[in-house]
Amino acid sequence: MRILKSAFRIACFSALLMISSVTWADNQVTQIPFSDLAPGSVGLGAGFRNGDSPYRFVDSVSSLENDNMRDMMPLYLYEGKYLFFHGTRAGVHLWNGEVSVDAVAQYRFDRLEPEVDDFYRTVDKRSQALEGGLAVKTNLDNHGLYFSLLADVQSRHNGYVSDLTYRYTWQRSRLTLSPYLSLIYQSQELVDYYYGVDAHESRVDLPEYEADATSFVRVGLNSSYRLWDNWYLFANLSWEDLANEVSDSPLVDEDQIYATFVGFHYNFGNVYEPRSGKSSGDTIKDWSWRVQAGYQAQGTFHKSHRGDLQRSRDVHAYLAGVTLGKKVYDGSILDFWGKFSMNRRFENDLQDNFWDYSVYLMMMGTGYSPWSNRELFRYGFGFGFDYAQRIPMVEQIKQADKEQNTSHFLNYLEAQVDFPLRNLTSAESVRNCYVGMSLIHRSGIFATSDILGNVSGGSDVVAGHLECVR
Image (cartoon, rainbow, N blue to C red; front, side):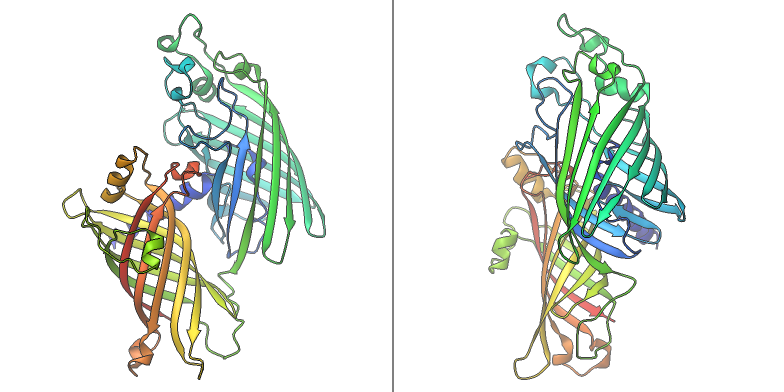
């Protein structure tokens, strides 16, 4: 029980960090139209973050390890009775009503990498930070007021920030426009960490500078368009005039900056109200459990799909675990499942064994006999994110060979094919059970995503499984 509780806490924190991390500091520009959907709604999407950096010789918001001028961000979305993952922030609903109170977390993408230019040769790195706190929101007709107070929870800048935002929402048919005005206050610790220059960093051409607390105004426009029933497009823009405490820093060469966030998301349905498009009259089976075990694969996810199931020649590592699933949409062609997987990674004395947690959405299709309505097989494809307590040794070796970085948080893909046991036995206990194979994959999105550590590469596991549904 202690292991399960620990796994649950780690998985929740992982999901919170991963999903909240697409927020650009405390910027409302990354708000997307998902929080207004009914509790139980689940969605996936992607967005591209772009904008100015206030620092000298830094052209974009992307990392040095990402050569792109923009940052691609996967969006994992969920609106629950208590928990929520909105793509731009995540947390817990403490009070819901005309005035709502949430415990929230979001990631500050502000940073400075000294390697970007020789000008920063004496300057220490400024790191991104996870911030958490409380948020209060009220809506009256088309007028909304939002206030948040967040503090550094990683001891990076050790400061805090407040955001008071007024938003007006205008909707016409499928189009929604939402201009907003924000008043931001940042504490002295936060501003000095990112824009101050300490004595040991200063030079003749880089004078010592101590930044003070600051407040400034940010304006923006968020827009969304409902392309089809469940498909949404969004395009958001924000602009701010930098406060003197920031623009006077010798590290800064901008007086104003802008940010954009453009992308899409798809709403799969409501986990509290499964819907059925099937005409067979079968009872909807809402839950599943699965046990799986497998070995480290030599080939890639793509090669494994084509039948290359060799065990890794360099790293003889293994995986075993359990997966819990909840059907979120029961369609006429494809079903959609939300899944949480907890696996133990056995590294065969290459390093200590560790736990690996995955949260993902799986599309599941069924193949039937052409002569009858008998189910012959299922095929599923899942997409989500994964957190490993340690970097798998195979990833350490692969990335070291390419002189590239690793990350505990990575994108997650899974493919499974299985066959119903009721075609082999009439035993009632396994009537709704399936046996088959899973391909488990974790990697970055080709080094295009900052929240995934700009990782290019990953690892694959070939596993056998037994899954039962009810």
